[in-house]
Amino acid sequence: MKTYEITLNDKTYIVKAREIDSAEIPKRAMPSTPVSATASTSGQGCKVTAPVAGLVLDIKVSIGMPVKKGQILCILEAMKMENEIIAPQDGTVTAIHVSKNQQIESGIVMIEM
Image (cartoon, rainbow, N blue to C red; front, top):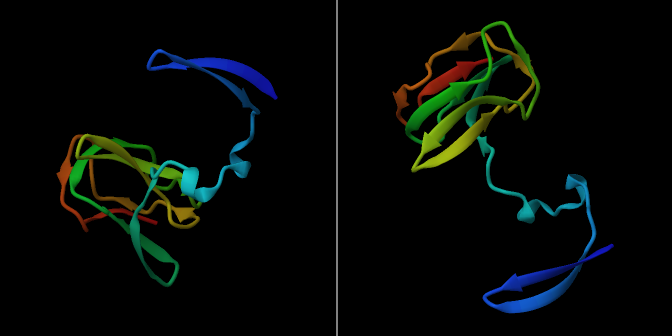
């Protein structure tokens, strides 16, 4: 455990803290991003749809690329916040229906796996 001196609003506090790994952090304390995209499945296929309207800032995958559940598929900016759209399951990218800098509406299919 380490001891730190922290000054906040002209008041000094002595704080003891220990380093923990992410597995020890309660789920409620974790940041809300990444965003879980809505996914519909049929057989082995999966269609990842936009959870909100926004601007596609980046696409992190390509057609034919294998992905793991929780992997970032793309970044969607909505209301000045960058949202990581993550894979809802393991699979292989079969289609990408959006492009970088494209404005999209909520509910459209962005990526198929």
